[in-house]
Length: 88
Image (cartoon, rainbow, N blue to C red; front, side):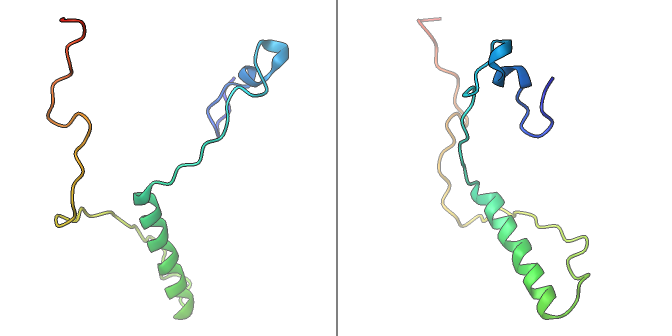
C-alpha cells in the first residue's frame, strides 16, 4: 500500500517486511518559480488584510509570465540529439 502524501510504500519502511527505516531521506529543494508565486500570494493576502477586504484574494491565480529580457541558461538537451553510445 502506498502513502497518499509522500508516495512511498509502507513496506519499504518496515524492517519486518524486508524494508528499512532509513529507506529514504528528506531532501529540501526550492523552486524559484514556486517561491515567486508563493511570495505574490502572500503579498496579495497582506494587501487584502490592510484594505480590510477578506474576499480580495478569492479566486486569485498567480501565473508566471516569461521575461523575454532575462538571460536564458541553455537547457541540457534543448535542440540536441542524444549522444551515440558505443558507436551505435
